[in-house]
Image (cartoon, rainbow, N blue to C red; front, side, top):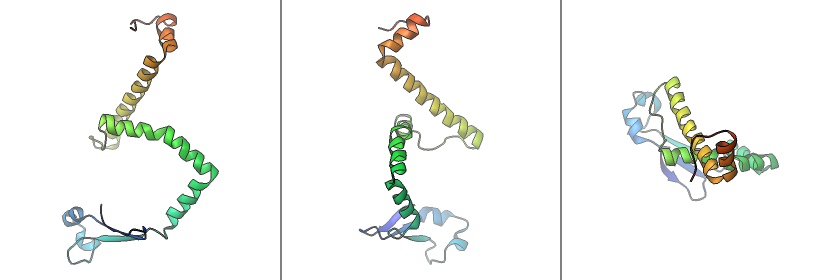
Length: 138
């Protein structure tokens, strides 16, 4: 969707997606506008869902959840998006898309293991000396 208008105080936003509306086969049923583009207005200042989320985030439990979210899943999603260029699925269907996502997760976990391996001399010693590793680290 493209944002058409947003007031400075955040009171009302208008959304429309002209390209999608023009090519949609349900256009006549969805909108009554003369140009065939559906426009949606939202009152951002009196939105109950936003208010509830804001209150929940202000609580002690909400702050703890947000703190953990910033340190655990969000960096992973950022790495997958920026380093792997993963912004959308390339395969269709739940089974194939799940396999594609699992591949990205596997790559992320390998990155984590390599990071721990190369930053920790004690971890390298355990792998090479105690477990009988095959390669030597410089």
